[in-house]
Image 1: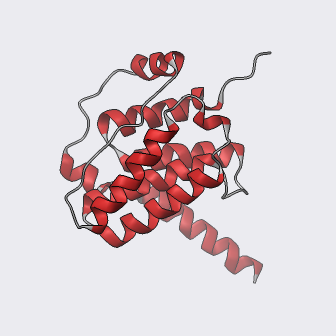
Image 2: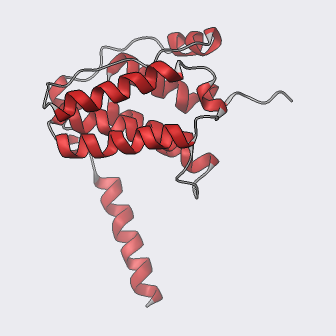
Length: 171
């Protein structure tokens, strides 16, 4: 059986589509968090966490949370550097991504308006997988900007209550 390159995983492909296409950074975070929990839930020093932090930073920046954006972008860059030899970076233009992330921090520090950038792909097969997903019209900007507050949180609240009850029962 041929091993699948880690960036060809459906969640990573969808992440690229969301990051470069719809700019739904909240969804990017969700997709990669699920993937990360699948492959390495106990390791925070994993390439997927660098992409998660990158998405989180972009989400914060667009919302005007400059402090949070800078903090998470710095964490993302640090994690990218710590995992720089990872095969997760074989299919993307790693140096350009690092340049764009570093430039984003300088813009944030100068309190400049949000500026998106793309994760450039170097692998044709990955590009075909992303292209096959098609481009959706996306959500409206207000929803994308405030998604964490506007989405249906009922499942999250039920799970929190279940975890709280479980902890209380263990006491």
